[in-house]
Amino acid sequence: MKVSDVMSTALVTASVDEPLASVVRKMVMRGCGSVPVVDGDNRLLGVVAIRDVMLPLFPNMGEYVHDAVHTRDFEEMEAEYGAMLRKTAGEVMTPKPMTVSAEMPVLKAASYMGLKNLRRIPVTDDDNLLIGMVSISDVNKGLFIAHSEG
Image 1 (cartoon, rainbow, N blue to C red):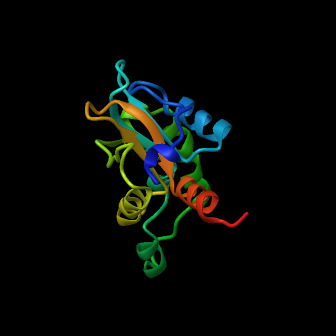
Image 2: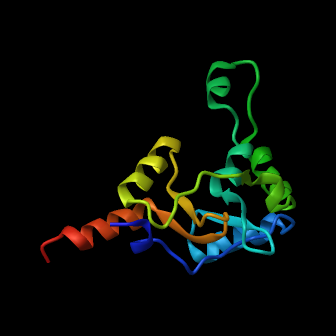
């Protein structure tokens, strides 16, 4: 089974100068965990994932647990979310993300996702044009349908 057999092609994308609030709105409305960032020719430039939005807000929990002198004001940290939303996709995206090809076997793509702890990965052609996204759920669903007994 190939990536092309299971990938999603009806994609929501963003531009580098798009406000992060708009990108997060797309994630929330579509129930997706990442949005590819493309240029005007649909070349992949990066990916904005939920973790790119949320992780900068979190304290380093190792420091938090072991630092009895300094406390963290979680409500104050939450207030920083608004500041994050005023950034652009280009400011928070992961540039030049790992990609897979449509002709790659799905389990090879899944192994790449596992290597980098990714739940989804962009699918590009030889010119780095975005042609789809594949998630670990897509791989599981495709394999189940192909191999279940009914």
